[in-house]
Length: 196
Image 1: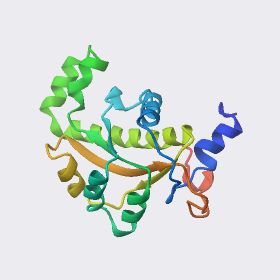
Image 2 (image 1 turned 30 degrees about the vertical axis):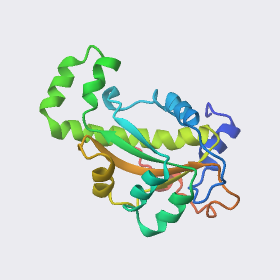
Image 3 (image 1 turned 120 degrees about the vertical axis):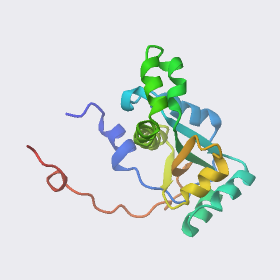
Image 4 (image 1 turned 180 degrees about the vertical axis):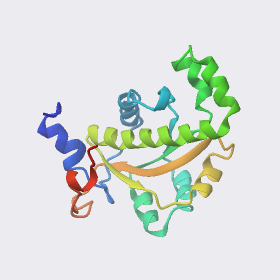
């Protein structure tokens, strides 16, 4: 019934793990750009498109980042080939003329309603974060998403103007052998769904 064949289903979902250790194979800017070129078409609320990527490549930037991360996440982040901070742009509406030229009235309303603008930024930015993880897998790479970090610290360090807000930190690369834990169980449909 699914449109994806078994191989694609396995790649994107069934065999996808949170990866903690990677090989030394590099991840290029071109690979990340290809991932973005794929996931940018996925839907967000009102086509808001607030998702942003901070590509943390240099040793100096990585040291600045891990200073705000939980202790257990530091070594794997320092060893990963690439780390990406997924963020939401709280002023996404300023770019609407580029993607939605006919929405100037909606952009003006959002300019005057910072609460609504920030709610949509975080909700749709979180969607983009999930799409990014799937895009990494679609590229044949592995992802190590981490929520164990001080968001205020990361935002102050890398986004001091307050415009972008961090959502998730993701290590990206080729998974090392035994680079992830054994898969644990998952809930069945009957455990999670209600039909009304």
